[in-house]
Image 1 (cartoon, one colour):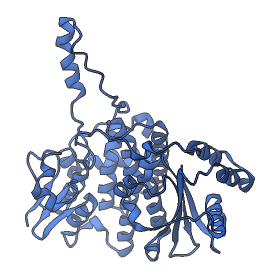
Image 2: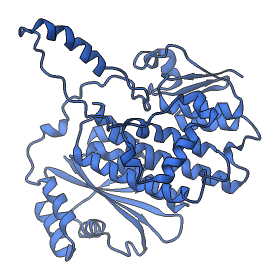
Image 3: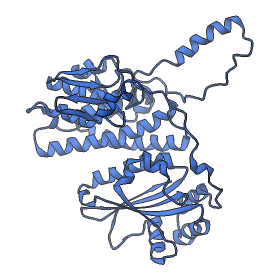
Image 4: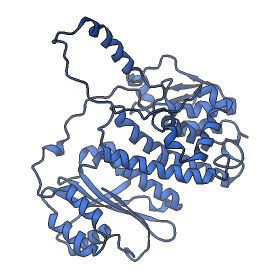
Length: 422
């Protein structure tokens, strides 16, 4: 069987399948001279993955995209492979940690990394939130690893491969020794894994970041018209070349050059009397008499001409059997909504004391419709039924109040969790 992997040599998501292949004795050929932004734009590549993301695995039975799906496929190619454990509960725990590695670790590292590479707007509050969420995840991981060498059982599984590859970008670009020393069991685990022979064949030597990757500032105006000292003109190009060296570990699509962002259409709307940040501050700072202070304040501020309220209901509640996975779905959704933080406020409720759990949300958006850029860029949106709130309907208005307040019971049921996007 010939398997061909399409990805750049530094793409950390391709490493998952390559390491799994080493453990299973499966041959995977990496496309030589793959160039991000060129190779993944060809008609042949688009046929394999219509959105042009990497990696993609070419198999005799057709292509597979999404790095975790590719890694799962390679892990299952060997019938007696230990990468998926030896029992059904092992399988469940492996899948659990793969989800955790993706939603709690990788997504927060990327939220921290991308703005520092100039691939997203650098917003300190967003970075702080991502780092806090990452520390929370690493704390949970550290607790588990305090009494476990590996994530599941007594040998390396696919969960360890995915977790290590997702930690790689953090350890090499962002998380200094000072940062990771707070999580000693995670440190021991990571360095144990990256020095295993099958990992080392793919990753090579791994070195921890000595400093946090600096924020890539906007380019200075062109001063070429100004006279320069002859010595300075000789030295400057070399310095610039050193700055522009490509990074040695890239995330999914991370080695493609950033493109200038067009102005958001919402910034062109007429000014609203509602100042979203003022509402968010009121919500955050109200510790008592919530109805009398925060809820009343919300309706006093609310501008039905400049903003709109929306209910959302998850379409597939019958699948919400495991509380941990359900909470991760909602957490992942909120993380992917970071692009809308300037224009939105949201509450997400996970309802029920027994499975299946129901997921409902309330969102405040700038404008009269759900912003198109959110619908286009956040795939979770299509997993929900969306209904505009009629604020003239007192029943709907009271539901808004209850969701903002996290009232319990809600619709006669206990709340498993309530999350806020602000």
